[in-house]
Image (tube, rainbow, N blue to C red; front, side):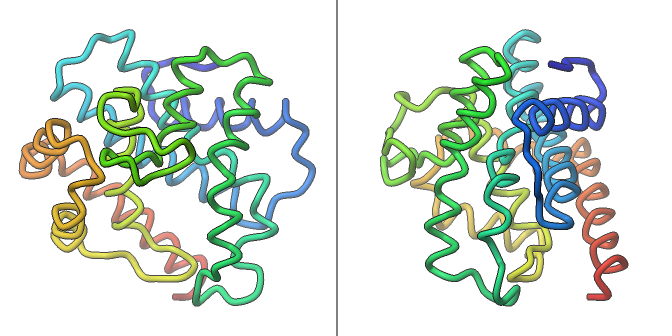
Length: 221
């Protein structure tokens, strides 16, 4: 497990470690690159939010590692996703998508990652009101690390190009999160909104724009 201070190096080395140790033989073209790109964007956002929340360096390091690995389960599911029509996500594909949290947990446990990191990854799709998955946890029963990851991952997913939709504008993404704020830990989300309006958040804007422009260039969108 790589736990250095560089966001890209952390994500790159940890994803490759999990990928190789789990013997993944086939990945849909582009999925591994997307895992790196999204993992770095979420990691950068988590880092800023953890600093704003004044969390300990040890805890921050655990959440940063989880941030880079949170979607690693999708690398085993890629062949089932977007396979027929990249302009839509089918109901069947959504069902498969929900398996990625359990897949990721199993993959990280096989690699010997500590339980704090495994649980952050496993529970990052839980909703604060108990309507999420995989275990329908609610409130503070959801690990703090997963609640932080939920806020950052939700925002980063909205502002990113997807195979089935265009990226949302930053302000639109924030408005969408406000509308669905029942899903989020409000204390963490309020801190995120303050961060969103800060100068430090320009790093996230710049990196998201870079990633979306790269996708347009590579795919001719």
